[in-house]
Length: 155
Image 1 (spheres, rainbow, N blue to C red):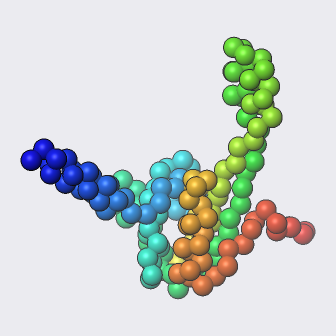
Image 2: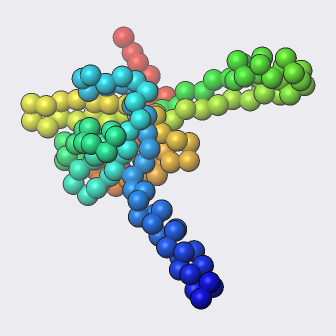
Image 3: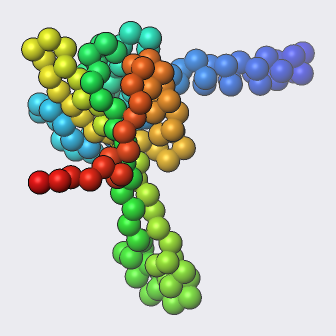
């Protein structure tokens, strides 16, 4: 009897965990959304006809796929100097190694025009999920993501 209960629990826990998690965790970094600060945690859900952003389980932004005009992405690369200094206090060798390492932040931008309503936002995605988000957005919108790091601005 204990073995049967153990097997049922082993099968049910992963199924419940997968069913409860849908979408991607992202962080709002800026855009045309009023009354929202950078650093707000959001949940991104990509559907065939809409792109949903929710905050605390409530609808935050709902973008029709047909209204999306551009998808962009970029990276912010910086050295971990502050962490290296802190670690160098305890171990100079490890601090020096950490100073040589880099960290990347991955940003995804979406702009849209739905009749008179135009807007845009930029979110920061996890390094393991940003490629999946880009592929999902490209798939539902039919638009190719633009690498904002490769763009040059001419005045």
